Length: 432
Image 1 (cartoon, rainbow, N blue to C red):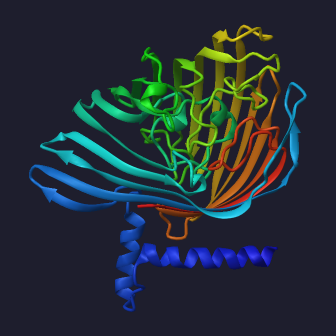
Image 2 (tube, rainbow, N blue to C red):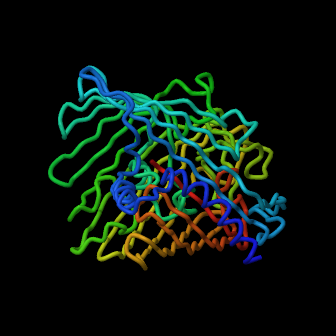
């Protein structure tokens, strides 16, 4: 098995390495210059296609490949109501995700635009496999930047905009995935209140609009989320994880978010939407599923409220991050009697990392815990990130996952609802 994975790794990495470097130069001085360009590149800055006095167009791309092995999971699980459900375990290789960004400014550098194509290979054949989106933003000054279009609700730190600057490759931990909101259409304001104190607040359609058409939304326009955070010593404005940059002085982050939304059954994304973020019970049962509480009654609408408190430390290649979540689900409108009139769940996620080799090899460990009314699932992740070009634009990621009754999962996520056991994955990620 080890030899097979090694061969697979070589086959996958060689063509992507050629793509990143271009043709391998024969002149040693040319090779040195090429390496300097690659290593100094800022991930996501892309290629400047058009540069005119009245506008700029830049193209950048994100792409990832994943080998996922879920054969170490149990064949089925039993939910909190005694219902047994099968798990369709995966063992496959997918060109996981492609995102093409077209961005820049028009007429005035303060007026910016972002247009993108987002496709998830694991969701082929589904309605949300390919997403076209974007937004417009106007920055009055560093204190006030206004945007409209599709954006991420700042329900927690991983939604502040630092993707893909996570320890894990294209996957949040179990606790974040369970509690967070997602991407929706709306209007937001953001900026720097004073030095190193940042905010983002957004009014949107619902918690997750991917896979939801306009006719499925209610008329309330009452989804609201706001985040406030402070950093020190060049931690990074968006709160990226890990200390790839190596801070010689202690850098810190402390922040909090509050979110609320009135949700209906129709406004929930399909269970296999690429960025699914349905409201679930802690055993994984969808709140709006038919007969969710095993009483021949279903929930039609509910009010979601969530508080997230986040903190992080970086120092000499080490990092530690902690997030605490509290979620209330109330005002349950149902078709009949159910055993609760409101729900309260809370959870904790802990993440630690160390650069074993400067700008080359990083190890991380994550623990995720949910304390819920219908179960207390946990998950542990142990992973390695290898940056072969000493740049965050390309990495190889290997991770072992130990899951206990996971309440989250869908096709583009490494675990499944009810997952109990071991999962292994190898990822390649390019962000230029």
